[in-house]
Length: 395
Length: 117
Image: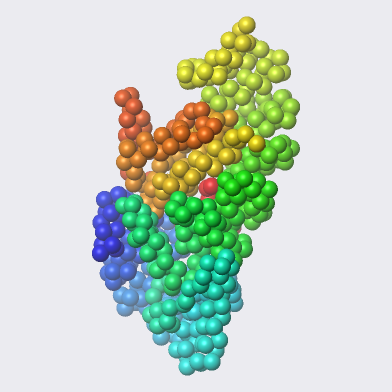
């Protein structure tokens, strides 16, 4: 029922015919879940036409092909994906599942065991390996895997003392469905939130995490939902669980940084942001936030370094350039502030001109300061700070 | 420490998260209490839209209510404020944007386009 309503909502809001790859992918997943494989394949093919590099769409299209009786064709497509990224568990796991579904059990087992080696901390990957071993009649090894999966779940759930969950029966995994269908549950959770159906959203996320314990996107979503619903403590629990599943989860470090800052734990916020930056050194927004936090803490030189790097990575980032201008100004480097502000892509913004006016005034360039303030008022006549400063400058 | 731009940004982020705004489609930052919001207001999980004018107004009001915020400038590509002060949706679908898991992109995972705070 919810799925049907979701499909209808996609019809209302999106225009799949014009080729929004994400929209088509979501439609394809929903149709797959409803068993409408031919339509699902069509939607997923269109998603691939819109974005030929859309790996999730390619994998899901292969599954849809398989369900339409074209298993070998689907396998060939999956093999191409696998060849492109042989060490990516997100390609290896679906291929293993696909092989199991279509009776290529030796290949399936080998791939699922490989997926397990690639990501030994993910309980659902261990569960898939257990299910494959069970289908091969290797009960002792299947049991061993199952126990390991259960231990991993307990570690994830119990790391914060908030109880544990249990893995569902292996029959769930032995359906050998497209593992990417879990993404549909995330979409359904968001769809529920749209209609303020919080319980529904929680239900979808819980269902996703029951079958896919340790699935990072669902745990991140739980954390973000907890930020809104239950408060920072519960949110932090979920983000910490993400880190227990994968300590290189940069999104979790990033989210935790904000929670630490909200709680006044600024040093921990800095540490979390620095970790996020170390994990993703080329993300300008991570550096931008770190720079701003360092500046708030009075560490001007370190802030300047981070903001400079953010600007190198994204020269068009107007916000970063103004912040760098402010950082220079506060560090007493007026000429540097002026240089960065004058080169800023957002020179015409009132806030940029206001900072520039201050820099000009400090460096004795009164006329330029006046012109900058006039520029502020031309853009926003209600800006009282600019008006007051202008009055002071004009004596 | 007084109300810093970082803290204002953190609060802005919370407002956007609360309203399920896709953070990868919107840029925002405070500069000494002057906030600028740019990009698209798109509900998380959708390619376009998902908000009503009342909801956009509510986001605006919440942003204006954040401690330390002096003013908020909006430069949204899919919402426009009319001369009568009402919010009006501008477009329906922005092709090709949003979250995509792309194997080639994953190979070079540190690509700056992958995420937004």
